[in-house]
Length: 424
Ligand code: GAL
Image (cartoon, rainbow, N blue to C red; front, side):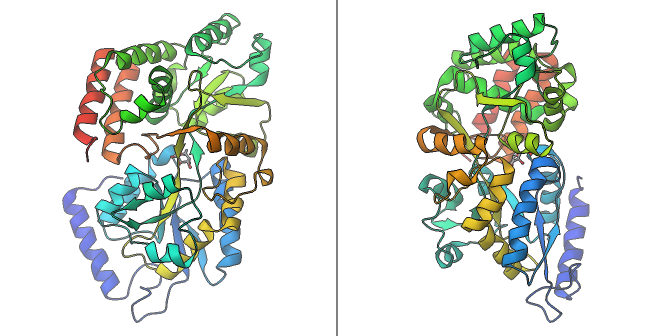
């Protein structure tokens, strides 16, 4: 969904003219002379499976709390926003924002703030009692120059290894791997037992997730955090050794990985064609929604108590057609009831600190306990660690490495990306 600059400028002109004349596509601007729109277009990439189940839960709460408004689903399918973010960028450029959109807390959200595309919600935070409802570290990642711009829906964990219990026990594997060495031994065992590609993997951003888990094992939490704030050198020998481990891991993965979204890789696990997949905990919700019960989960081998976090948050875009409707959405999202309705179905844990663990499925109960005691480390593909520009550079470097396996060139590309983006 790319537009040429010229076409985008022309389209933006048309959009501005339409809004000015009160002829916007959703029934007119709320501040214009025409009838106010009731529609609240919510833009996400939660189109199927557990992701849609989570969204549906939240929408049910919105229908109760905001019955004067109508939810309009603007979801664009594709894991981690691989398609949605491009569509959103075009729409923002054309002056046609949805009423609200999903943005990851941290550096990714700062992209929209710095571009002046989202409104300050500081006074709504006070009115809705949100200022103290979320953990301080999370609020800090949503705040720029003293102003707060989005409401977090959840905390997800990225560095989780999901396993097919039957495949593992059939291969005689009964304990979770706790180090990279143990993991390689298990993968070899699985291969000798006839599972040709025991580790299921998808395309670029999923590869970056796997690589980041290896980095956490190699570097530990503090040094891993330093990769994103300029304190850890991407050119170091410990990074070279992590890339070599990651390269070895790729030999256990499905060869068609570059054409796979995360759900395609997940299906290999469900079908017993693979034993393991590294994926965020939206996988718990997706497996549950698909009725697959025979799975287990553990932090990626060697990650110890590093909780690689990310948070989906929602914003009020500048120029939204129905800002009052958006505020009702955001208030619901930030409420105890909204967070429960969403997170019990989404695999994530609530961002609010007043959640009752026993309200949640078994996986989230363990996640709530871990989040309270583990060390928070960020994720680049899910925006808590790096900007969208940095994500793009990393994704293309991973895609290239997936076909050429050139360790030196991956390390150089990652080092160059950090140099270009780390301080921005
Ligand atoms: C993440 C997002 C999650 C989940 C995942 C897979 O970026 O934060 O909520 O949707 O992508 O699509």
